[in-house]
Image (tube, rainbow, N blue to C red):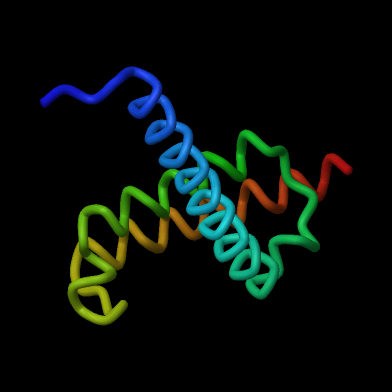
Length: 98
């Protein structure tokens, strides 16, 4: 049995509202964490900050930090340190420009 187009549109509208609410919750959560970490006090270009967040997301998607409770070994530590240094360097350069 096929659904009428109006019912499908209603379902899509409800799903879009749910998606917007979920994105808002995620943004607020990440924002709170970023503020606790002190990112609100750093003047940094938005593109640089986004790049640092993308690097962080890649690290966690690979599962290196999540699988061992945040303790890294071997190469994971080196890549994490360089990512942290890159983010710190970007933050410093953003502050120096202001």
